[in-house]
Length: 111
Image (cartoon, rainbow, N blue to C red; front, top):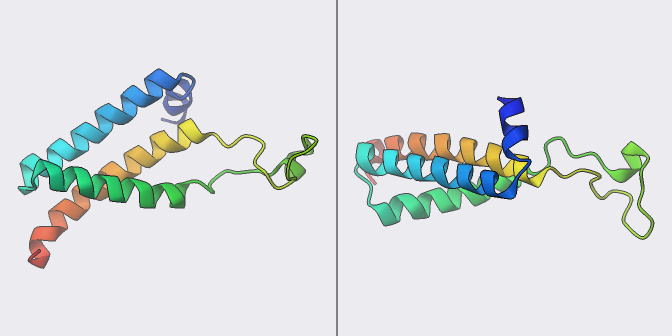
């Protein structure tokens, strides 16, 4: 799975396409299986995706001072390789699972 994510993240367009397809599939599952409206499923997914992004961003980050490759004029604690495309893909997978779980639990709570 890690190799797949790294190969997809090599291109902006493949990354964007994978994010759109996985997101649409998760929203479709939550709409069809758990009786959400399309607007509700999309809104809920949007909120979950952004909250999860802030949780996923720090994983695997190494500062320039840790790698010994400090670029002149930058903060030494700045990431040397942030891997934002890979994190966006992992975040999409995580958010899709969270959406399906939340959509399944919401009817049980009476909301």
